[in-house]
Image (tube, rainbow, N blue to C red):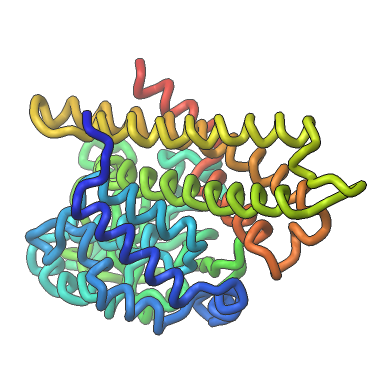
Length: 379
């Protein structure tokens, strides 16, 4: 397989690089995070104007149906820029989940707003009792005449503040008497929904949702259940992995430059053998991470059985996420240590990048859970 970037991938990466160069000096990034939603609405509108909201969506939804290679190129560049706008959570997860599972009338009502960035949807799935396992969902739904009534708690909804609606998971009784899990579109202004914002480790804003007898029309139920989530998540996880590699590359490069110029005992820090060995180890881990992203691109190839490709792709992405989640934290720790106390301040990208890596490594599940998922898909 040819891993050289296509013209489309190069264009997307260059577009993201120009956006970062124009908008993302580190002081401006800090200012963006002080906004109530944790990012700049002006930047969000600009990214929408570039077409990046619509690009990952299917062509029938007004998008470009970006392939996995383009996703890696784009989100790797956004990761290097430490961009705060929640493209993964709002577009690759929220918008794609809604448009893939909604009936035609509901999808038509939301399609244009999602593709132009004027409306945002966030996935509300994680709960205190879920323990990172998608099967443990305690929010309950009750069917009524033409409506569905939802009650429960969603404690962590990334990019939930300022969202126009939420895709809420809830346990529902099936015809066979067993519980299943369904997803429902819940407008943000519906009575009975209480939203409490809170800051995550990287400075982004998540929402705590309390649903107290929230009622939505029955046609707001999405089809597919957890299988729909499994269909949507691999591409989103690939974007998270690519973003993490971009962040790793940024803080590694800045640390390498620092070690070449900062002196101790009249000797550049980069001349000390112990530091050289650790930097080489992190360089190898960074290259391995890139290789695992390429392996995922192989699994996403065209031709043959689509179901087999989807399985191979999900398997490779789970493996990449498990590996990158571990090595990214080790890299971040050492990059901070090599900078000393300055490494944890807001004046340098090192601390910002490491906090982002902590979140990416732990959301939506911990590294061991990712490894279990990889092993399960291999069976």
